[in-house]
Amino acid sequence: AIQMTQSPSSLSASVGDRVTITCRASQEIRNDLGWYQQKPGKAPKLLIYAESTLQSGVPSRFSGSGSGTDFTLTISSLQPEDFATYYCLLSGTFGQGTRVEVK
Amino acid sequence: EVQLVESGGGLVQPGGSLRLSCAASGFTFSTSGMNWVRQAPGKGLEWLSYISISGSSAYYADSVRDRFTISRDNAKNSLYLQMNSLRAEDTAVYYCARDLRADAYDIWGQGTLVTVSS
Image (tube, rainbow over all chains, first blue to last red):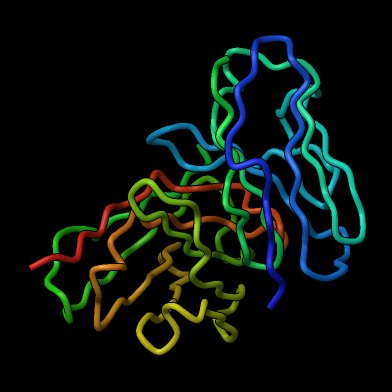
């Protein structure tokens, strides 16, 4: 089974910062990778799928990129509502999560 | 309104059984693959199971294979998860989620808490 390594496990950032989160697969994959946002006590929310396709209604400050084994979620200018935990998903395997906290 | 609503969670003793339900509304359930995902307290997300549109195909995570069974009733717009031989480590919030594609679960329920404890 493909293993997913998500990093960092947490980060501290300020409003307006550019934030980057990475998922690395143990073997080359197609662009079947998604990104999710989860806030405390809430269900996850789909942000991006197929590596870079923005889900309807998701702000354009979120973007996804990558290929092969390395994939990245970028928040171009962090907003107050973006402080949350982010997960990648590939073939039924979620990354370990990245908690984005207030600096 | 598009929504999924889980029910059936609660407290169960180790070795016991529980059946979770997920009621769908606001979209065409009968043409949607569906998943169960869980989250242990303070932990990350874990995919558990997927069922195809017709119910003829089902897949499971190793952690629940042979103990959990996913099923669906398209006439009732409902998804189910039969959980047997429950263990303490099965304690989690259980979510149902629509499968847009393998990496895109686009509709999620609010979750139902299952606690396995004596």
